[in-house]
Image 1: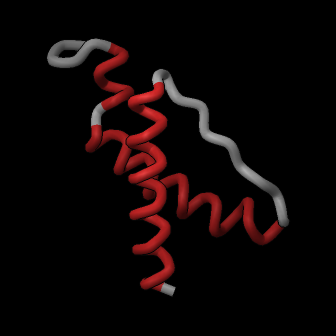
Image 2: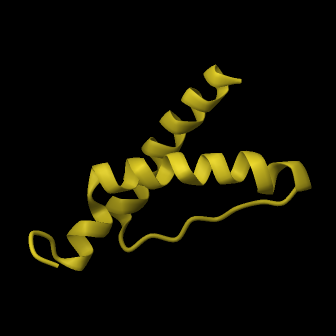
Length: 66
């Protein structure tokens, strides 16, 4: 993978932030209207913490947009 190992790529803050934005967009348009729930699985606890923070930030931005 060049610059990253697989795990460090999956734990990268920029990657997680970009994925979190996409996840929130998908959730708002497809999951939430149908009253479903979602679950995120990560490669490590560090990635889980980063996803939580990134998802919270992405959700705040989405709420401001609406």
